[in-house]
Length: 134
Image 1 (spheres, rainbow, N blue to C red):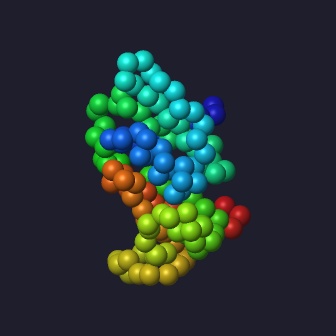
Image 2 (cartoon, one colour):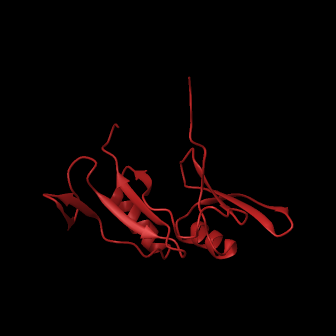
């Protein structure tokens, strides 16, 4: 059996603002932007190199804007990724690690280097560095 996660819905209050944020500040590619009838609209964006996309959907009612936390993006070089995102205008934390029960600035050991950011609605994202070869 082969099961793949392809799309994650991200609840937002303003589709245009969220689309601009994800396209311009995180470098996600806009795959589609279609009306759903009435005032409904669906925008799909994909992080560079990812097989999974996000949907910004104005017809989601059970998920409140800003209610997601811990959405994780995995990268090979967290420092280079952070630098590129900051250049695009993304506000994010410095590279951090969790050691001895507390957060510290700087890279940590294997799978222990993170950067955090939020979209305009407060949906919280994590960028995590994966070890080379994993």
